[in-house]
Length: 178
Image (cartoon, rainbow, N blue to C red; front, side, top):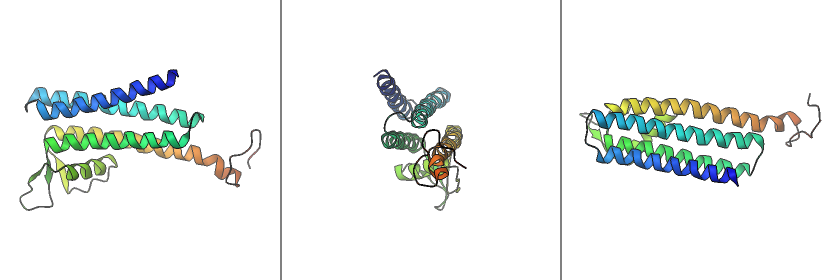
């Protein structure tokens, strides 16, 4: 019960910080205070997201609860994080290298595409941020490095016992795997 309350509180903090971040981007006029607020609250948002995911990975590795449910919630949290970054990029605008004159794009789907490309560190170069968006893109890329590495190592840890047993099932307790 205590873990459920903590997880719910952390998820609420995640949603609150993301909403606050988007609100600051939309409502605070351009200038230095807005940039500082965007970076600060964006760092809080990314930090809460990483903390949520690390907590979820610990539960998966400890074998606590339903792994499928933990995985589904982690995917939801990732989608919300990418969507929040996309909303901030949409408000700030991203430079579009695919059109003549390189206009500033405020289209949500362009921003969502840019967010996914940045998070996965593909970096095609067809869109790029300006101003404080560059700092936010760096923050998102760094978050992507950490999270994608964590996902890969967790998947390897979960799958490894099954592959070592050679039967598609985890080894029995005390069974020696050669």
